[in-house]
Image 1 (cartoon, rainbow over the protein chains, first blue to last red):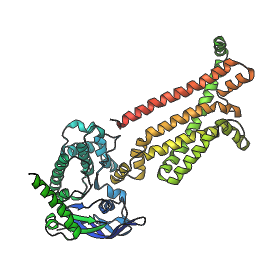
Image 2 (image 1 turned 180 degrees about the vertical axis):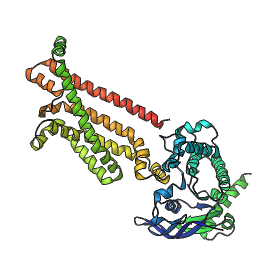
Image 3 (image 1 turned 180 degrees about the horizontal axis):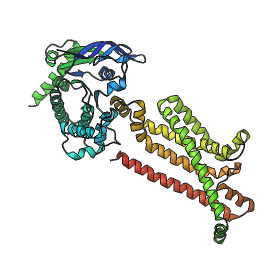
Image 4 (image 1 turned 45 degrees about the vertical axis):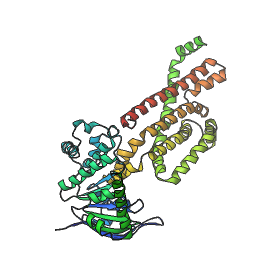
Length: 255
Length: 214
């Protein structure tokens, strides 16, 4: 049984006179890992921000978890959508535990439940050392900080997780490690929908059950990684895939 | 001179402390009133370009007008006494408070505010838990500058009949008694210095709590 958890219906978004997204329509099933691939200015981040209501569409309809965003309490909606960003966005004046506890506190959880959840999450993202909880963000490395970012987003066990280029600012080795772990996390946490925006084509193809290729506010192709590689739907997608092939030639030449 | 000063304290210490008390009362009540006005205005200024520009030009103009002139300009409108002195001091305290509050809120990264909203905070919760704590060191700096300005200017408030340590200086000038002027002047300077020192300590503590400079 498939259940459409995110649905965009002829959504259009303008910033002032600037048309960022002319008209997109797509739907995502519950439990899918969708990656969105596009260069900067393609409208991928705007699309992501419309899912949790940080941006409102100019026209069109967005349905998330069965609710039309036009008549939904956005504050309540956001408490049940995880959000991980490139800048990580840990609050510098709060400890790791306090950062993770933000949404549970907003929902009025009891203190014991919060503490045990924080421990469980730190374990889940591979920060085993017990004293991480009491540290401040600036005392952690970039990779550790983003692990906390993921833990914080997972805090209330939301059905939807949004990732906005979460690993772009990390070094290659840390990035690959985290990619593997996020994929594992998605397999572990059944029925959770991941919406993952990136400009890294390898990342998009590796992680996504389906890959949405965006260019200038339009969806060029929305299909499985295999389909995208073997049957590019447009000139843009073909060019994109070719960049990888060119890189491959470089590698082979160096061997 | 020294003996005269000692003599003054032996005979008039009651009067002296009353004047110090009056001076502090004037300074802190005007600072409090100014804070109540400046914090919301500063917050608005950080959200709205128009308000910010208005506040900054207002602050510039006030900087040009000497404090003393400002006190006298008010006399025809609101007379003399404690009330007008308070109004004048509040107006003098506003520029550093408002400008630093705007600066403080502007220094809060947009990213962090967006993350706060995404985690499900209402605008009020965002302000209380994220924006205000992160802007606090800047706001405290504004309070420090305002307090020093107000303590110094409060000695001028005597001219419009509000009491305080300015009284001593004025009496000294009138009777040509140097010791009064010295006692009044040094006391005002000391008060300013102590205020500055205390606030520097508080700001340092807040910054350390922030862990921002790790």
